[in-house]
Amino acid sequence: MTPISILGRECLEQVISYIKPMRFRKALIVTDKMLVENGLINSLLSLLDDSGTFYIIYKDVSPNPTVTQVDLGLKLYCDNGCDFLISFGGGSPHDCAKAIALLSTNTGKIHDYEGYNKSVKPSAPLIAVNTTAGTGSELTRFCVITDEERRTKMTINDWHVTPIIAVNDAALMTGLPPGLTAATGMDALTHGIEAYVSTNATPVTDCKALKAVELVLNNLLAVYKDGHNLEAREMMVYAEYLAGISFNNAGLGYVHAMAHQLGGFYNLPHGVCNALLLPAVMEFNLPVAAHKYADIARMSGIDTRDLSTEASARLVISKINELNQAMGLPTKLTAVKGFNAKDILLLAEHAIADICCLTNPRQGSVEEIEGIFTSII
Image 1 (spheres, helix red, strand yellow):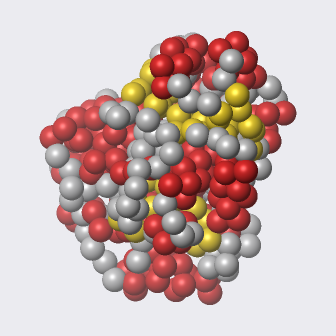
Image 2 (tube, rainbow, N blue to C red):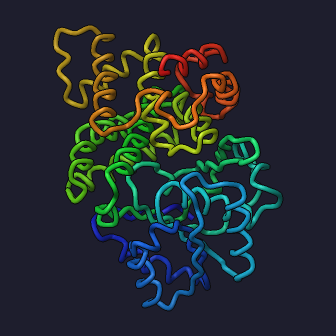
Image 3 (tube, rainbow, N blue to C red):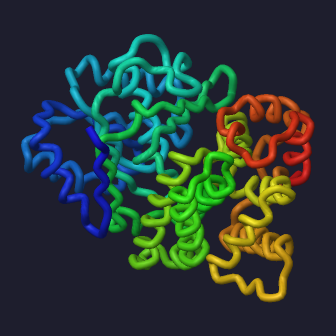
């Protein structure tokens, strides 16, 4: 079926009207402990209870979902006779649910699906209810799972993992802690920028990516400072949604390829890794992407009069650095707990094998990726 998107304040209530005609019997709800313990999930559970929809809750998803968590969730899904899934949360519950849904209808282990369109059968139906404005996972074909043994993140790029319904309700996001708001917002910004400079970009993805970047640059700091600013929250919802559409079609780049390695190796939040790497990768891409970065400068309201294309582009990089600093996000690898400069070669070797590298506008060697990492020590 064609995926459905539900957006707007308090739109969660509409989801039952879509679920009931599908005649599902029992859901596996994939979420995390925090969302259960703080009661945010209760609004969803009340709707399901009132509609007579049965469910089992799987709440053991960590910020970087692992192969083990996918396997445990799959067992719970099968043992309880579930026939659809609901993910409730940010990118981690969504990605874990995608992997469970994929394995519930296809054979093997999740490792078998690393890469591009490896599955044969459609996944079990998945409804993704979003509680952060960042990852875009609620509507995309991407799924990222941490392989604990290799200490790396596997990227599954498969149209079959796309949720059938995506729900983005800004009212569910007003209680987000500032740090999580910052990290997820920088994830959305990175999606927009990488999609805009991607070698697979089109006029359709460009217009969405540019608007997403504009909305993030003009609203993220406001919602970081005041988490109950519902207007800014709603603008961030639209930003992450537009960015999700754009990178789902155009692809990503070196920021994500490198961030997957940092996150997997040091167990760091994905958005924090993106924020740390984004300015450095933009510097690397500058020789081939300055004109597009200059477009971003003009679109986001930066005064570029009488400036060269490169100077305009550098203003965007400076603005992103300033935004990171204003929100207390790390700007150096030395701020990463456990970081060791000796790891850089291994990180670079893993990064260059990541599928996200394929659409980066400037292709580099392992040594050049090492250089990007080294530039932010």
